Length: 170
Image (cartoon, rainbow, N blue to C red; front, top):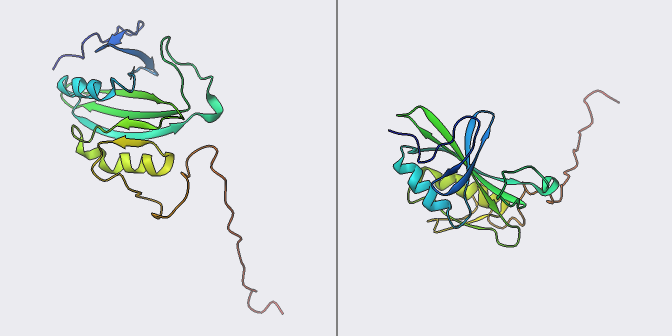
């Protein structure tokens, strides 16, 4: 297998299948738009990145000014996907910006069925909706739970600890 089209040299990130790329601690990172996300995942699959080892959400509420490559507009939420090519012994990360006022991203389940639970967890914890997912229901929280616990603005709850009187303390 060859490297994906346009893989940048170590010191000069470029476009990969039309999406902006960067390097993070020596790892290749691709930053597609939401519209290009699923197509990019398909092209990377064709390039040999056939194993999706992780998909999760990130809430950057306190870091909206974080540094991203030129041309990538920072949004409050992000979907991060880690893919591996076992043949090439390489890994690639895909980071998709998701705006707070439209928390939808197309599902990559048709290409990577292993993301079924990961997309559900991201939906459950962050409220990011994966369009086309076969069963986008809560996976960790009860069905009647209100809110998404990993959002940075989620109200922290408190359950009081109740201690029994220690035996023989009287």
